[in-house]
Amino acid sequence: MKKHNEFLLKSKDLIEKYSSKFIFSLGLAGLITLYITTFCSIKLNQYLKWSDHIYNIITSKNIEGPIYIEQFILIISIISIMAAPLLNKKFSKSFWKIFFFNFISFVEIISFVSIFIKGEINNLFIISTIITFTYLIWIIIDILKFIDKWIRIKKSSDNQFDLVKLTFIWGIILLLIVFFK
Image (tube, one colour):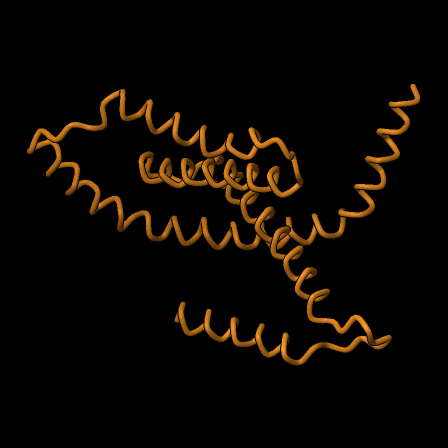
């Protein structure tokens, strides 16, 4: 009974600590998911016309799909990549984050491929997209908190920022904007 009460107290503390962050992440992920599903449904019609042409080329040339050994190797490779953090002697928080990120990325890729195979957006795609973006936003919030702590001057009692570090961050942001433009 004592362990049960301790578990409930720890659960309550975790819920109080992370509830606003989770709800914000979930809300933003929901908006991103709606945008992605709308974008995919618009682009899916164009893709299906093109995929019929590719299907006709493949069937006329007798090109076969992957054989079973290739599928087996693919599955073993993916499981190995996902299990690698678990086999480490040091079970740290970051390894679990990497494992969970690999897992949700794998599910997201499978669901994304399934919408092109089936030709329609299904529930697996919507749910995996919302989970993926909720987790990504969660990680981005953690990164922003870390950057905020890193930029602040520790010797100062005021909330002052180190201008050199702040300039460095702005330089990285501008580099990314130019790179992705």
